[in-house]
Length: 105
Image 1 (tube, rainbow, N blue to C red):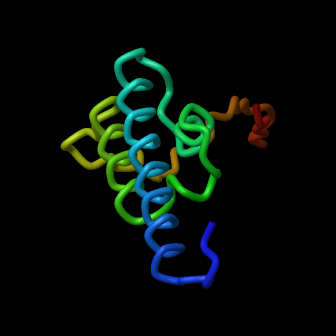
Image 2 (tube, helix red, strand yellow):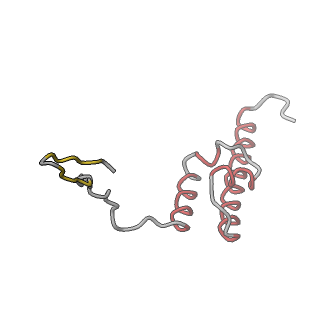
């Protein structure tokens, strides 16, 4: 108990709790990676038993993103969309009595 309400002692306890949760999140990330499970921020939070916002904080987010990149590396070449060249429609045309008629497909 903190009879005088010493904020320094309370701040130290909070800091220890925070560091413990961050360590649990990083351990959970390693566990998910080793088990070959899908790595998401939510999966890390659930596995670690921490709030869902913690994996998005600085110092945790970078580790999760790096693990996701290791699992699914992005290709080195840049994807280019197919050409948008329009091709003419094929029509069947017939002439009869000098008049030409075409039917669309």
